[in-house]
Amino acid sequence: MSADSPLYLPRIMDKILVEKLRYMGAVNIVGPKWCGKTWTGKKHSKSAIFIADSGGRYHNKLLAQTNPDLALEGEFPRLIDEWQEVPELWDAVRSNIDRIGGKGLFILTGSATPNDKDIIHSGVGRITTVKMRAMSLFESGDSAGTVSLKDLFDKKLEDHNTGNVDLKHIIQLTVRGGWPGSLNLTLENAFKIPKDYLKGVVRNDLKKMDGIDRDEDKLWRVLKSLARNESTLASKRTILNDVSEEGGTEVSAPTLDSYLAALERLHMIENKKPFDPNIRSRGRVGKSEKRYFTDPSLAIAALNVTPASLLNDLETYGCMFESMCVRDLTIYAEAIEGKLYHYRDKKNYEIDAIIELSDGRWAAFEIKVGFNQVDEAAENLLKVCGYISSSSRAGAPEFMCVICGMSAAAYRRKDGVYVIPITALKD
Image 1 (cartoon, helix red, strand yellow):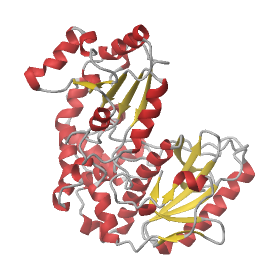
Image 2 (cartoon, rainbow, N blue to C red; image 1 turned 120 degrees about the horizontal axis):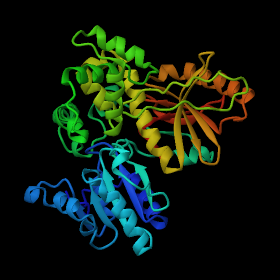
Image 3 (spheres, one colour; image 1 turned 180 degrees about the horizontal axis):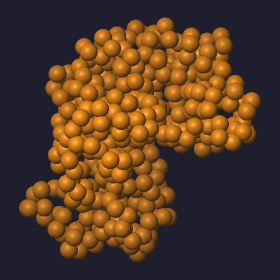
Image 4 (tube, rainbow, N blue to C red; image 1 turned 90 degrees about the horizontal axis):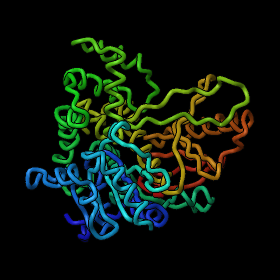
C-alpha cells in the first residue's frame, strides 16, 4: 500500500510531523516495528531511501556505509528509512543541515535505538525525535471521536449518548492491537500477528540490533513475566522471582537489566513514570515506573490467551484494557503537548493515569472495564485528587475522568467527574 493510496489512514503523527518540519532541519520518528512509521514518513517526503531494503544485496545499506552523503541526495524532505542500520547517517544528516540550512530537510525513521557510541553529535537544534506508536482506537476507526481530550481540558464537553458497547468486541480490539497491517484481516488472522511479532523479535531482531546472542528460553520467560505484570508496579525483584518459578536456567539481575534495556531499545516496552506533584513532605510519592508493553496485543500474545479466555477472566482483561487505554491516552496527550504519568504515594493512594500539559494543567484518569465500577472509581479520584491538591503545589486538576469500556454515554456526573467511553475518545 502506497502512502499516497486512498487506503492510507490518517495518523495523529501526521500533524505532529508537519509542525516539527516547520522549525527543525530533520525529524526522527522512532517506534516499534510495523506501527506505520515508513508509510507516514513517505506521505510527508518527496524522495526516499530505504536502508534495510534487501534489493541488490542491500545496495542502499552498502551505499550509505561507503558514502553517507550520497544516501542523502534527493528532493527535500528526504526520507531515510531505518537509518539506525547505518548509524553514521545521523551525523551526516546533521552536517548536511548545517551546510544547506533551511528547515524540513530530512525525515528519519527507526525501529531500534542505536548505541550512543555510534553517534558523534547529539543533533540538538537540528534534529528532533518524536515517538510513534501502534494505532489508537480513533486512528483505526474504532473510536467515534466524539470526545476530544483537548476539549476536556478546555471544559467543552456536552453530555451525549455514544451507543451500546459489546464486551466481546472491546476484548477483540485489545487482542488485535493497533497494528495498521491487521485492520483488514479476519479476526482469526489478526490475532496471530502479535504472536509472530514476538517470535521475530526473540529469534532475529534482538540479535540483529546489537549482535548479542541472547538465550531464547530466558527471553520468553521474561516476556511472559512482563505480560503477567502488565499495568502494574512490579519491581525487578518481582520479575526475577516470577521468572525463576517457571524453572529453567536462572536469570540473574544483570541479565534481566540487559534484556529490559534491549526491549526498550526496540520500543517493545514503554513504562510510565510517576507523577510528581511536588508534595511538601519528602518521600511520600512513589518512584516506581508502571510496566506496559507498547501495545496490549503483545502482552496478550506472550500469555498465549484468547478472547474467549479473557472474557472468562475479567481481572486479567482489566489489566490489558488499562494497557490499551494508556496507549491511546499517551498518543492523544502528546498531540496536545502533554505527557502521561501514573500516581501512587506512600499512603497507597493511587490513580491509573495523569496527563500533564506543558502549561502545567493536569487531569486524572481512572480506567475501568465495567460501568458498575464507575462509582468506586469516581470516589477514588475525588479522594486522591483532593489530597494532592491540599498537600502540594500542583493545585486542583483541570478535570477528573473515568475511562470506561462499557459506558453508553459521555457525560459529567453531579460530583464533577467525567465518564467517557474509550470508544468515543480522540486527541
